[in-house]
Image 1 (tube, rainbow, N blue to C red):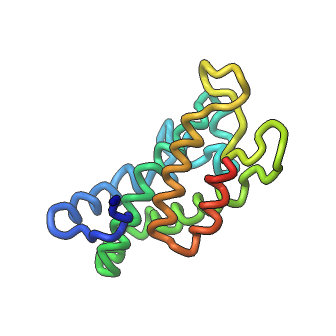
Image 2: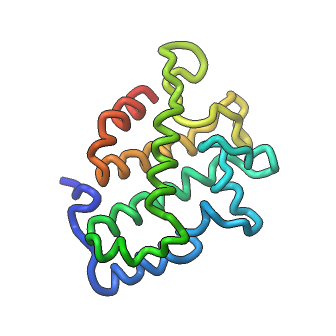
Length: 164
């Protein structure tokens, strides 16, 4: 039986490593201006335009796939751990906002191209059929982990993942 994300709270060395990651590049990526950060903080997944600038639309799902569980584990560790997050990074609000944006922009049509699709319906490098598969699958994983840590999101996440 799998353990739900957040059932076990990190302590000691593991907690310190998670805080180090959250308060470093990983936690700051959505707000950073360094070259390449726009593939996350201006991703087409959250209404941005990073992919047309020469990047791809895959980086936000990968970032979310790591940072959603990072945040959920820190939240499971309790308020004292969350209070140690660098407030300038805004990791909690950024993750929450991005997950809500993705859930709010699922293709709700029941038929036709992109019906039920999660995320942008775009060609990926080497993809000739009009949509990439890896990015939405990474985002589905991130959404499922988010729903484990944020139970109020479960109905929306379940509907989006099943429709996809």
